[in-house]
Image (cartoon, rainbow, N blue to C red):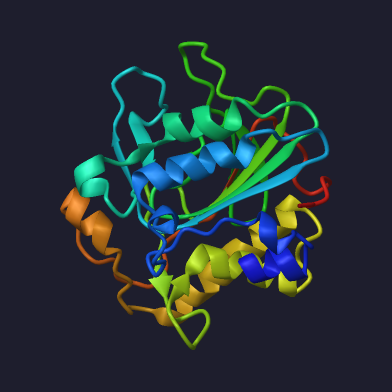
Amino acid sequence: MKYMLVNRFHFPESSIIMLTEEERDPYKIPTKHNINMALYWLVQGCQPGDSLVFHYSGHGSRQRNYNGDEADGYDETLCPLDFETQGMIVDDEINRAIVRPLPRGVKLHAFIDACHSGTVLDLPFLCRMNRSGQYVWEDHRPRSGVWKGSNGGEVISFSGCDDHQTSADTSALSKVTSTGAMTFCFIQAIERGHGATYGSILNSMRTTIRSTGDAMGGGPVTTVLTMLLTGGSAIGGGLRQEPQLTSCEPFDVYMKPFSL
C-alpha cells in the first residue's frame, strides 16, 4: 500500500508513518498507545486541500454494545499487538479520533483490512450492494441522535468485509505470499484500471474475492484471532468476505470519481 501511495498517488514518503511488528523503534510497533497516537497525528493540523489516508491490515473483532447506538448490537474493534493486556480499539474511539474532528475541505480515505470491519469507522451511511452491482445507502446513524460524521470534511472507508464476516490472509490471490485479501484486491483494482469510481473499485474487489473463493473450493482459510475470541472454527469453502463501503454522506458510487 505504501508503494502505491508514493508511486501512483504521489504521497511524499516522508509524510507516511508505518507501524509494524518488525520495527525495532518502540514507537513504531502497533501497540494500542502507538496506534492511537498515530490516529491523532493523522488529523492534527490538517488544512483545507489536505488528503489523508489510514490503512490498517491486521486483526479485528467486535464486542457487545450496550448504549443502543449500533444497529447490529455490536461495536467493531481493531486489535493492537497488546490487546490482551491493553484492550481493543473500539469503533467509537476511531470515530472520535479521526472522523469527527475533520474540517471542511479535508478528505480522509480509510482502508481497513480486518475481520468485522464493515462499519469500524462508525460512519453514518453504508453502501449495501448486491452481486449485480445495484446498491442502496443504509442509514446507520445512531438512534441517540449523536452525530458520527465529520466536522464538514469528506470521509470514505473501504473495509475488508461486513460486520458479521471475517477477512482472510491468503496466498490464493498473489500466488506468491500470504496477503490481506482486501488490500490485495484494492491495489489490483487500481492497477488494472478499475479505479475510475468508487463503485467500479468496490465491484472489482468483490468480483476478485468471489472468483478466488469459488476457485479455492473447499480450501480452508483460517482467521486465528476470531477463532480465539469467538470460539469459532476455521472457515471452509474459500473466501467468504464482501468488501464494504461507508461514508459520511450518501453519493452516486458510479458517478463520483475516485481520488486520493
